Length: 127
Image (cartoon, rainbow, N blue to C red; front, side, top):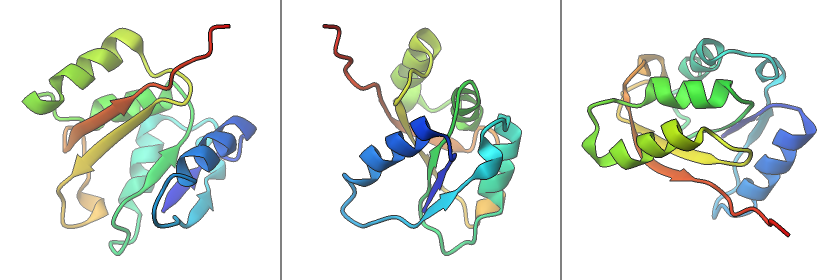
């Protein structure tokens, strides 16, 4: 599933990412993401049906960065370099964080419950 803010930039970003997936994701326009804070997005994740196995959230900063930083377990040694990169570089336009939560239900997702298994910053054309 993809929860995508209806803003032109987020829709364009989602389109690029979703085009690379092997299995198409069901896209839901998240009208409430445009000015949402990280707590609101987290609550939206907690309300997902349990049959949803993964979700792509395409939103806005600083909300996205704050959400990722709040979800990630600070004791996850494997994700330390990626966490440090986010702390140093922030969350630039089109960045992608991949978080893994091991919970029985989406309602169990909480702060520090995720591992940061990937953080990708697209190359920028500097010409």
